[in-house]
Image (cartoon, rainbow, N blue to C red; front, side, top):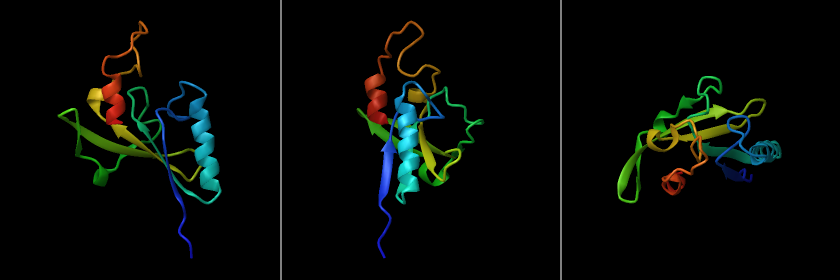
Length: 125
């Protein structure tokens, strides 16, 4: 008996949670199609402040949360939340850290100025 192959899709956006570009829908469809073809699929993305926790029914994965991640000599707390992708038997994990992802803008402010910590946020993710 062969084991199911496992795939982890890592993306900064995924429909329906965050749709900045067409890539969000591509990741959604790719994950669903892979899952439907018998692969064991999981997705992971940052839990940006614009993602509505209540609407998407995110809940904390206690056994995976409470870890500190060291980046550039500093420790940053990490929480993991999970939601089920609507109309699919598929779990999406969200990395949460207030320092990096709580703000309502994603990569730049309202004046289109890129955040100075984008590189650090990407490394953390």
